[in-house]
Image (cartoon, rainbow, N blue to C red):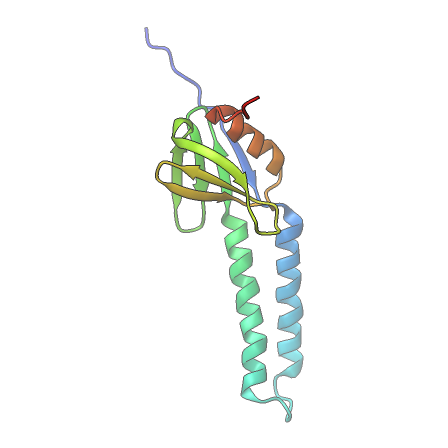
Length: 140
């Protein structure tokens, strides 16, 4: 008789206010572009700046909408819109706060470093989970 192991996953995603703020910025800059187009005083460089902001916020929204962290009994998977990378718990060597003011953490593994974004809903729970599962308890 074969015993099947259940794969219990927990998914952590970026908080909705971050995505909503990007969508609001796209709407604002899109409205500004719409209102500005056809004005006689608008030169090409001003239009380029407006379109650059729209592109920046659209790319940011796309990235944050597809970013997630999936944990299971074996490890953590970093998923973006282009790729995913699975890291087993035993490969994680340390986790430390990022110097970037978003409140993220840097996960150091045997194969490199990865960031746990500070905008993740349940960020503290995810960091605690990584510390616990990877056995990174502080020494006393």
